[in-house]
Image (cartoon, rainbow, N blue to C red):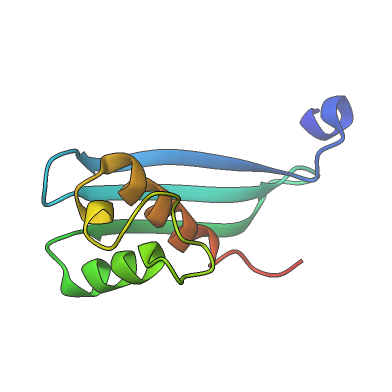
Length: 102
């Protein structure tokens, strides 16, 4: 019905599963891309980004580095770890990079 009504090929369901707004920041996502023509999950991710994890800290800093191609405007490697908005932008970017190619 959704495909007929809107012409869409898929629907992206997004749910914030974890959130800590004060350092050390923590954000968790559960996303599913569902085929609109039949009940089939095309892509799914369930990930938690915790600033207590050195790997997450390193990746967030690289994302916000001024020379990074997807750098957050006005962010730097320190503020991305203290700003819930900037950290959320990093986490969404990291999750969406796992989408399969068309």
